[in-house]
Length: 157
Image 1: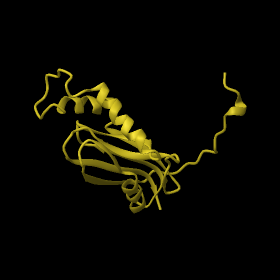
Image 2 (image 1 turned 90 degrees about the vertical axis):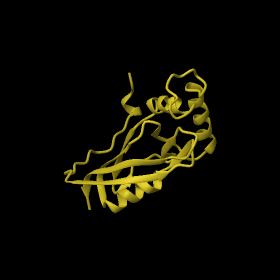
Image 3 (image 1 turned 180 degrees about the vertical axis):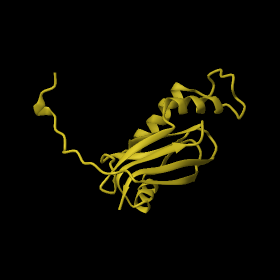
């Protein structure tokens, strides 16, 4: 049982969600790796004049994905790429290899990560933790053009 002394919660706030703002973000990736989207998503929230609500991101692809991860130490991202490579190696005997040896592993890596994210917006700001950033993960070896739907739902200024 958790002691009540180890818990705290701020007072609840209520707003009417009367605004939906949508945008399509297009990114040219450099190939396998992480692309930091945090500043672009923050700009979208600012342009939407978002005050309270949530921003949703949805990637329209099956061989790239989204995640929230540490932004302070680049070795974290390198280790995550290594881990995903171990979980879905290029020479794993996959049947589906229509677009090359990285094709099926990319689909598996997407299944293991996320196609969508939702981030609260509080007082006009993304409610990310100090060391958190929003990333697109490109699972394919070569560069690709990726599309992400951004949508804010909530109250605007």
